[in-house]
Image (cartoon, rainbow over all chains, first blue to last red):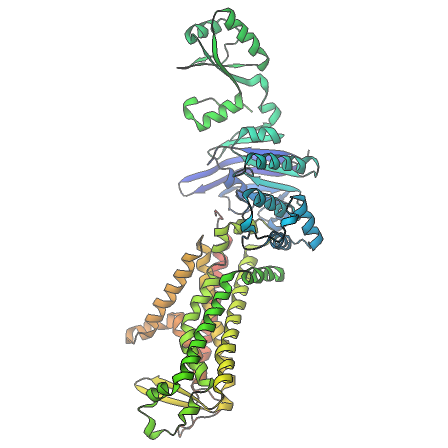
Length: 310
Length: 297
């Protein structure tokens, strides 16, 4: 598999603050690569460095095999991006916006091509409307058209579902998948929602405080055998003692209001049966992937969980 | 680069504020013309009250198109920097505020090209403002008031002077003056563009540019020897009104005006050189700063 994007020991300091810390990862051709981290983890700073909006303090970025420092324009010719919001010229029409960015991208886009792009994102009938009359979802779709107008092979989307309603989120998800599977694009998409990444990405990285926590295929990282289970029973003390005498003692922890343990998803019915046969009633049972449990612990330090091994 | 410049000009042409400047110039010039048409004689009486006895003049003809344009330029060229700052001060900061700057910079164009295209677009806008001023203040005034010899009232040192320029010797001076004004106003555009790079909304750079121009102009007009010698030469505002030099006609040893001459061409040339140096310096700093700037907007 050809590596499209490779980041080596990327670091960005802002005075005393380190936004990105020795970050390394790679994206392969054809990947939908999830870039996951809570707000402030360093996702946007990293993406801005990939697009040469921010100068790294140190580290190297290679895209399409070329150094971003020395081949900036050549590389950007082949990248389409939306960073945070799809901000466009509000006082211009959808057609004018697309026409401007096509020209800036060295693309000789005639009227037919621009109308085709607008049609693809469902805005052909609003081609002459000013962007300040558009909804957030329409702006997002126009932003996608701007990102794709020059037919780039790598698409970078920073939190593309932010501010969208549920239908908009579903449409965006569909679009990202079609970019990969129908148009053979490589897509890097950042999010603070594991559930989003899980639905669209084949490979992913989790970062926290600018550092890599884990990187790999989504299937492996969200392996059901690494399920973390939270149980609240009629008698948690008795349930804890009962479970200590079973095979499911790995990571068995007694918390104030629940019990937590690591278990294979397929073993959960057996565990329920075992507790029921021990006359212990179950109030609540919440399975989570280990990665999800860890990721949630980042946003709530009280539920601290150790990171998953790569 | 040409394509980028076209885009910049297209964006400027689509913004309503662009036309506010032209409307403002039109309104001010028309007010001047109406006022002088209604009661220009009183103004001329006031200006000539001390010299009427020894200076033979036809007051009716003294208020002509050339004279009107000079009076208007004297007033308006102080305000025009504000109009130039409105566009140049918004060039980068306005895009940062809208969020389009980061989108633009993810495209395969260099940051230097972006600054140069925005600078050239601001320059063209400045030229268009001056062309409109020429149309309104010079050609419309000629249409309304006609053409005749031109009088210039001037204070030189302790002495008040009235210079008379023959009507056939005036028009080239206006072309030269407008050319000079274009360069002087481009310094303002370059300053506003530099300040625009540091800001993420356009109000800051526009107001800062205007404040700098006002403060420097006040200092440039202070008649204190120590400031004359040590400060004024370093302020670009000291050279903004250098266009007037084209109307200070040279005289022979008998004090008679020499048609086609300028009293102090070396001073005008030096002023032009200093203004052009300012443009290059400010533009160079703008490019250097922008190339290193982290885009966080």
